[in-house]
Picture 1 (cartoon, rainbow, N blue to C red):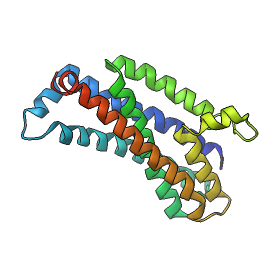
Picture 2: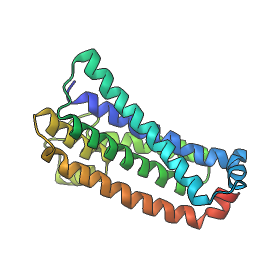
Picture 3: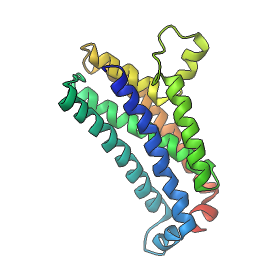
Picture 4: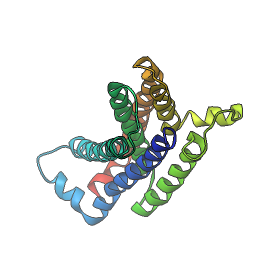
Length: 199
């Protein structure tokens, strides 16, 4: 349970944020984004609000799973501050992947398909289904592009009694991933701003 509780929580986190990102294109199709942009706000403010909503959805889901497993199964997740930092960093990195998918897709259906595929691939590569200890160097390298792998490393370090030092590298990697993904998604959104936000 110490391994698979965070593993499954991270798998569902990826699924949740890709579904959240799907609302960007769904709202464009339904015309609600155009109505929001008619208000005295900028496209960046509208997009920031959507991103915050996607992040909060993932953050709350991951936090709820941690609280429930603590209360129901008396699972010790380790240093509370370390857990909080990992939850925030993992939710940000997962949100980044969701936004990247949303910025690359042309319709909400594509986001659902790509999101499910990415969730499963990241689950396999990142160790959400089977621990990756002893994996080949290629698989080990590929696993490092997933938020699952970095967050699982952090949660494992905390479960073994590590303090904040145990999550320093995973949190730094997840935050770096989030920054890169947000920047790439913003560039793609900007290029397609007329079609995506203004419709």
